[in-house]
Image (cartoon, rainbow, N blue to C red; front, side, top):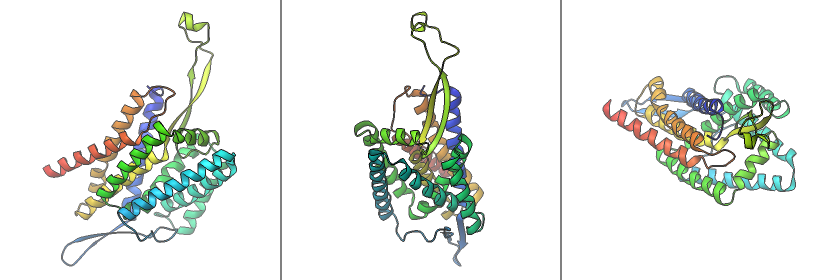
Length: 305
């Protein structure tokens, strides 16, 4: 097992919570209208930072991949020259904007941006486990609000496959994703879920006696990258969209779409249980499999209904 049992359970529960919050926020940002001939039309409220790009499907995927490539390249340059302050500025702005988008679904734009600004300041300058992870729940909901309306289930699934291939290359071949994760963790500005915990460590003499020194403790960090949260959420969001377009009520569509995150959470749990300590693994291929299994399960349920 990669982490202790308690930390593993916490990570999985926080992941499920993030997906539920994301779908809940998406449902509140959706406007459902009926045409005179009885057709259901789905539209999304404008975000507090303006209109979404006028793109869809393959254009959206290209937009995301280009943005991901440029962002990764920029962070690698920042890491190469040791300009942590530049990374923290980018991190601060991203947290502020995406959190503001999420909060803006429920309150006036000015209030939303002010609240998001306070959270971003606390996250960067007064970080602790609660502030960090609570704001992460808002950040990825904001990302989903931007991109879900620009995709459908098919294109979101294609995006998952492409991101999974990239994740495998970035972790197993180039290993730059590992370097980025370590850099972000050390800078105390990690994009994703993060928990620190202490574990027992062995003294040299105890290697022979095979006993643990009860007074010795080693600080370890458990993380789950932001992409591992955001991309399954985007896929689940397109599933919610498709259910609403099919005429399901919001509450029932929400419950049905949660089948996808639940399935993904099972795969996440398997990764954390089977993974070895102090080794990095690309999570997206497994989470993508969970998305597809969850969507297949949903289709079987709909076939019975």
